[in-house]
Amino acid sequence: MSNSVRLPWPPKELSPNSRAHWRTVNKAKKSMRTSAHILALEAKLRAPADGDIVIHLTMHPPVRRGHDRDNSLARCKALLDGVADALRVNDRRFKPLTPVIADPVEGGCVMLAIVQQGEE
Image 1 (tube, one colour):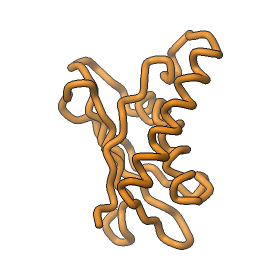
Image 2 (spheres, rainbow, N blue to C red; image 1 turned 60 degrees about the vertical axis):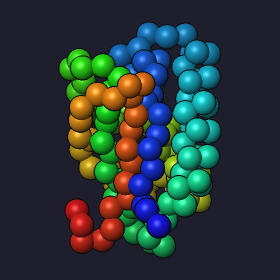
Image 3 (cartoon, one colour; image 1 turned 180 degrees about the vertical axis):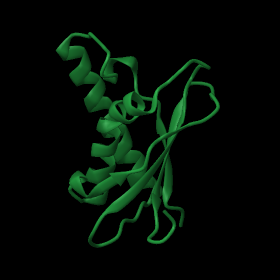
Image 4 (cartoon, helix red, strand yellow; image 1 turned 90 degrees about the vertical axis):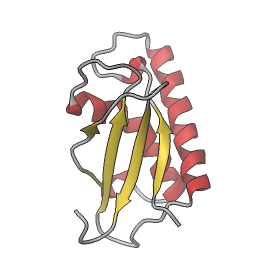
């Protein structure tokens, strides 16, 4: 049983720098949250029963261009909400580590792993 999941790359509308219409942003949020929920259930992610849930994000952008870590994490909010839904936990328990910006892959993706106690 793996404790990681491959999630879709968040669209540009979810960037804090986006100036998209609120309806477009909400549609993107709903889509990402639903996708993350389904993918996390399929991956059978598990979290500790209590305490912090340490999350490691590896960002594989769709193109080789400068991506900063704080905006990358902010773009993932809807994905994290979907994972929290799948785990049936409050996302305030999540303790995301600083995201790693890795090599691009076609279409982009976010690799999310739940770090076990002592592996931080």
